[in-house]
Length: 92
Image (cartoon, rainbow, N blue to C red; front, side, top):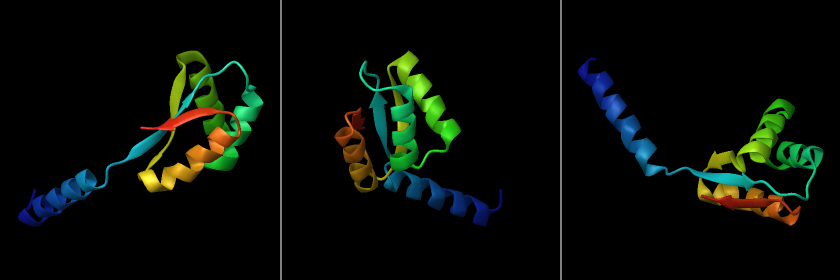
C-alpha cells in the first residue's frame, strides 16, 4: 500500500468506529402468521419478498433474527411500527 492508501484506510476505519450501527432484532411468537410477518418486513423494513421470507424463516426456527441495521435514530420509528403491529422487536 502506498502512503495515501494507508492514510485513506485509517480514515475509513475511524469513520466506521465513529458511526455505531444498531440492529432491529425480531423475535418469534406463536401469534402472527408467516405472511403477516413477511408483509410487515416488506412494508416497514423495505425488504425484498425473498429477504423478508428468509428472515421470517430464521425467526421461526432460531427464535430471532436481525432484520434492519443502521443508526439508532433511523431504526426507532421502524421498530415502533413493528411493535404496533403486534410483533416482538427491539433495537440492540
